[in-house]
Length: 193
Image 1: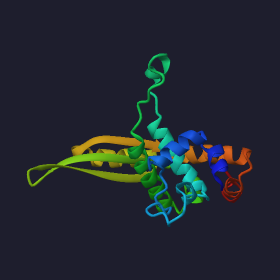
Image 2: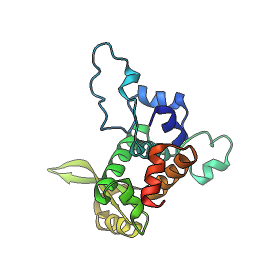
Image 3: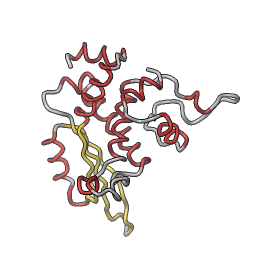
């Protein structure tokens, strides 16, 4: 899909997208982003996007632009977000979509599951040879599976970030179908979504 179709699926305007791109905060790890041939402009690195890219971007936006219900009620505070910094949200979006797709056989496999697929990212702190070290664990599964994994690894846990991959994907499909985006129509038809 082209950029305008991507931005139809994800409620992000072109200026916000360009800002994320300029800061190298987009969650598109599998694109050629590490070198630009001589004479090629920065914006020409990404010209074709997939529904998986849209899912990554939507997860990133959801994680970084989250507002707590209390803050949303306050006019002065409603402009501020409680979410993650965009770089952290981008990394989690890449991992969560990658893990869920690998575990369930792609986007169609995620939609085929009887329960919603969730993803949890757990930040851990532990001592190693007298130094405090940090690490991350990622897990995709049902909400119950994710809760069990969080419980299993709670001893060293600093933070757990949980989101519903299936719900975000279904939302993208609905928008994609209404906008008549071919990839969304094909996936919806093939997965009976």
